[in-house]
Image (cartoon, rainbow, N blue to C red; front, side, top):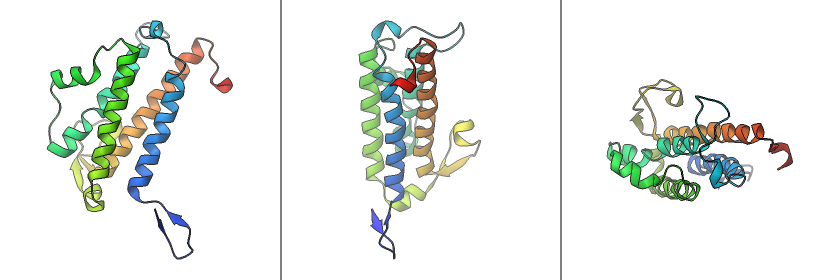
Length: 169
């Protein structure tokens, strides 16, 4: 954190990214605390992702971030499977969320301000990349936070459907 001419703290881009990632994870953690192993294969309706499916989706978007931005490659299916473990096991998915985030933050901390500003190919075009072919590296991290927040909201809604009122948490 730096200070400006009026002595008010100014957050760096890295600090803002970390705050966004932490905020999204706090919301996800509030839902994770309400989950139990027997809920992993539950979904509110036919055709919707199960709870474990939502967690796998969150991990599957963040897990490729570091290899893609650092090495320009996507993880193999075997690497991805090893990172997640048992896709229907709550403890395994919690571990994967922590491990993948740790790697994301370690990589983020290794970058200079110039590297955060560097434009990187967006990969597959989708709403998370705003359909742009390239984005600053920093924006790719913010995309992870936005994606996680979106699915955390879905999980909170799933729990609400089961009568677990989030306004009472």
